Image (cartoon, rainbow, N blue to C red; front, side, top):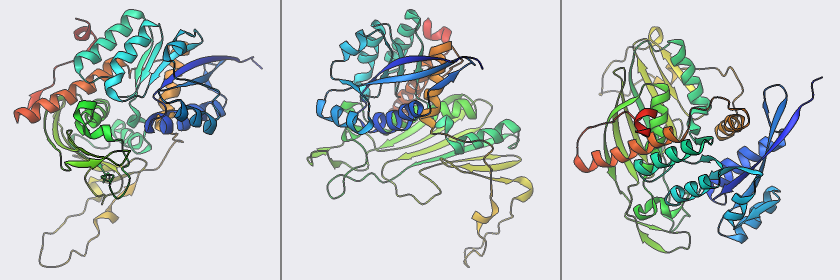
Length: 391
C-alpha cells in the first residue's frame, strides 16, 4: 500500500468570531475537514488544516477556542502572519476592513481566501486581484451557493439540455429580520448602516453575479431599485439606530444568450415559498424550481393547461404538477466543499477559477446596481476579464 504524506497548512482565520466565520467556515467547514482526516490531494498527499483564530476580542476568541477545541488563538494578527507555517490568510471580517487586511496579508506572502464582497468598490477589489497576481500567491473568494444541493441539481438539468432554450430566471431571496427591539435581530447591525459597508445590494448582488455567470450566462446589463423599508432598528446592545443602508432590492439582468433574470432580495419579507431562496428557470422544453437543497421539475409534456376563472376557487393544485429531481450524489456543506477545493489548489495547484477576479465581478455588479438605482436606468456591465483587469 502506498504511503500517504500529511501536509499541515496553517490558516489565519481573521474575523472568525462573527456569525459567518464561526458557523459556516470554522464549525461546518474547517473542523469537519480535520475530523475526516484532511483533504486528499492526488494519491499520496493529505492536506490537514491547522487554524489559528484571530480577532479583536480576546474573551470571544477564548470562548470559541474552548467550544471548538482549537488550540491556537490570538489578537495579534501580525504575529500570526509572521509564522511561516501559516500559509493561508482567511478574512471574514466586516467588509470595510477587508481591503486593508488582505493587502497586509499579501505583503506577508500569504495565500488569500476571503468572504464576499472582497471589497467595497470595484477599484479596491481589482487592486486585491492585481496584488495577489503580482506576488504569485493562490487566491480565492467564497462563492458558496454554487455547491448548494438544489443548485447542483439545477445545473445538472442545464448541462443535460433539459430546458431547451432558457427564457427567464426568477430568484426570490429573503426573510424577515427582526428589528431588535422585541425580538433579537438575526443579522448584525452593521448590515443596515451604509457607512459600515452594509446594504443588501452589496451583500447579495455578489451572489447573484456568480450564480448567473456560472449557470445561465454572463450578466450583460442591470437595472435595480433599492429600498430602506425599515428606518429604525436596535443594535446588539439594545440601542436604537437609524438605518442608512437598503434592506431590500428589486433587480433585472440581461444575460448573454438572450435570457432575462429578475431577483428580489429582501430582509423585510415573510416567507411563503419552498425555501429562503428559490430560483425558477423557464425554458422552451421545461421548467424547474430550485431551493437550497431541493429541485423540482416540470417538463413540457407534463405541463398543465390552466383555465382562468376568478369566479370560483381553483380546484387545481399547481404544486402537484412538479416532480422532484433526484439526488445522484452526496452533497456536503457548500462552504466545506469550496474550502476543500481551495486547499487542494494551495497544495497542488488544482483548478480553482473562483479567485479574486471573480470576486471583483460581484463587487462590480453591486456597484452598477447602486448606480442604476440612482440613475433610474439600465446600465451595461463592462467585461472584466484578466486582460482588462491587468490593463
